[in-house]
Length: 295
Image 1 (tube, rainbow, N blue to C red):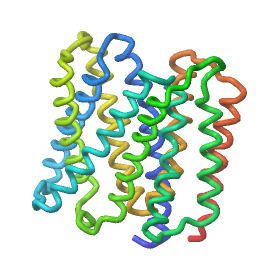
Image 2: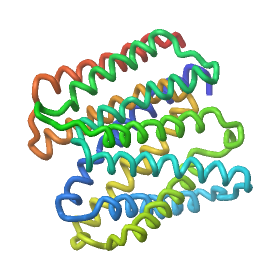
Image 3: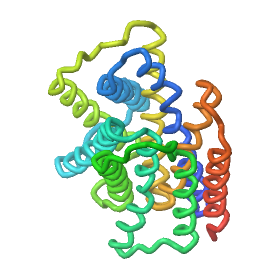
Image 4: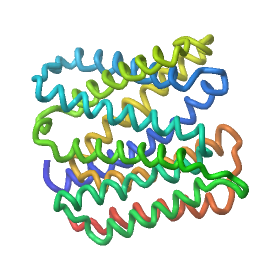
């Protein structure tokens, strides 16, 4: 694959990752409204993803073999990805989801700062795109007046962003897993996540099957497992390896944009002027970064 092809595939995968992760409300909201606990939903989305991806890898005769050193790092990656989800949903207990989304979208800044610490310096175009997308996400997600700000909620949302940023950097920079395919990387990340959420469920004593009563519930769980989980993790891994974690994180702006579009089209949520402005700024910032890419 030439450098130009890597760039095209990397940016395309990054956009696909943002869009697929932004489909969370499409499948998740009906489940939550139907009384499915967050922990159960997280467990099933990971567990079903493991089964689907595992069958696909068996069909393609792909190897599942990893050595002990690789497995240790894969466990760390799985824990980071799972922790990011847990911290995010825990932050909803203290602050509105829109405000949490705003703080979680600090992860491009964390990625860029970590990369600077590793002596990899993003171009000024990337820094400008990061700043612009953060402004766009603030416009998309900022709550109405009179909202009480909880520093615990903000800290949890920021921890979610930090875990995700570290995950992206490790996937891109670690020589230990460079040769591991995106399929295997995602599979073991999902396995670790499923085990982590099941453990969390048992500790919390939450009924695993609570609220899962109809065929529609099962279909939503499968959709949640395929699109915002398995597809998102696969495309994130591919994009991060091809164009780097910083640019991939900027392309994550398509996540809140997609979530807003889904909410407007399927759940009748209002489309205000600040949301329209936020969408425009996010898309313009991403297009600027892509167009400014010299290769």
